Image (cartoon, rainbow, N blue to C red; front, top):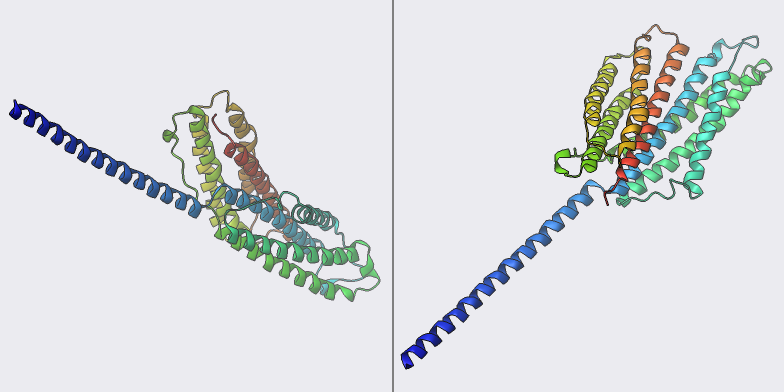
Length: 354
């Protein structure tokens, strides 16, 4: 009987010790797993911050729109001034000078200046932009203010010079033409230096676009929106590649690199468009598909068509005015496409499944 009691007691003690050891091991595993989860969360957070958050993307896209619109307005004005105003050395009191287009572009530049001064300095959309990257925000906003200031100075000079021709003041004193032309070049070059810095610094913060894998999403609407976002971002990336070349393009330059850039944009878009058309949109997201088909696709198609029209009609022998008109048309249709992108990407990014 004593032996039985001893044996039973031994078994109970052994079981208790074993269970304690098992509990300790479970605790160790749980602690280890908890630590691993913390490290994993830390890595994911660091990566997200490093690659830029949603605020940075909105900030970047907003200033891409600013850069495109400022560039289009200023370049149109300068090109029309060059087209419509004769060289000072060839100007006579009896010269026939019409600055109709330059006058129109002058109004466009004035409108752009007012729009962005109000937007930034009067608590408008630009003033309300936030960014996770403080360094980016500080640098780009500093560049923007400098560009806006030099653009305003360029406008003031252009207003004086174009008024000199529009009001036929050159018929009274043709000697002022040379100095006025120098003033235009100086003001334009100062603006261009500031603009180039803004454009260059902004491109440094071009967000890394990670392709989404639609197969990672089980919800059909999330899958469809992933396809749509990939399409928008792929198209923008190729559009920016084109514009980096185009803004440096001059009459007589080799046009083939630009043709290749537009071909790449068009081919990529057609491929992505097919994916959008076969994506599983439901009644909840069909409005985005319809917007893509009726709005964004139209602007891309019209831009490509406008480019082909321009590239097929220009050469080194093309009249300066005809070249500038065609160039400005390409810029205008490019900006339509960028406007459509900004509107569409914001809508797609705001979609959430609840």
